[in-house]
Length: 244
Image 1 (tube, rainbow, N blue to C red):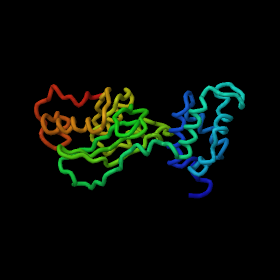
Image 2 (image 1 turned 135 degrees about the vertical axis):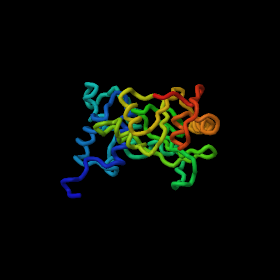
Image 3 (image 1 turned 180 degrees about the vertical axis):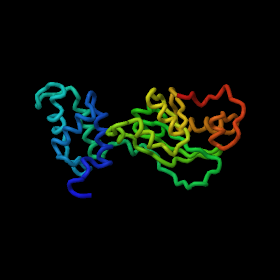
């Protein structure tokens, strides 16, 4: 890549910036990106992000609240401190995530791949259009493995955020979410991913255990099709969720 073609922001830096923007009330991603470009130049990477200070944010974002640079703007000092820690890579929530387990095709006969929208740890608590990441599990009736953790924050920079998020889980058969918007659901379905809304959320282990029970006792027609077996009689009392 030539010097003139250097990307304006690296992938890892983009993830940190998107997460930092979320840490500050009323600050849009585009506003923070502009402040950082003004402070760091046209190219932003993780090394440059580690030079950003709370004062830089307070000065750059002061106009958002209509305050002078030296006044206490309404974003909140604690929120800006958190944002700086995130930009530095010191507090991005990665410590709460479990390790990814190895998996090779054929390891788990009769398994399907499931994505869970998550904002923290191994909890299903995310909305499709705004979750921080997707937890990807390979699930058979007797076993489950966390085979991927896919950051979704980079979607905030995409022209079509829903399409970008769908592409992150294009190898999955099923998607669990707390909610999913009307424009997003058709894109997920067209990608041959079956969306299941579970508004109450829950721990991944609980969600997967219920899914495994459905696989064993009463697979609905769509799951039977995924598993490559003949679709049986439609199950009326499938408790794993409702299709979006």
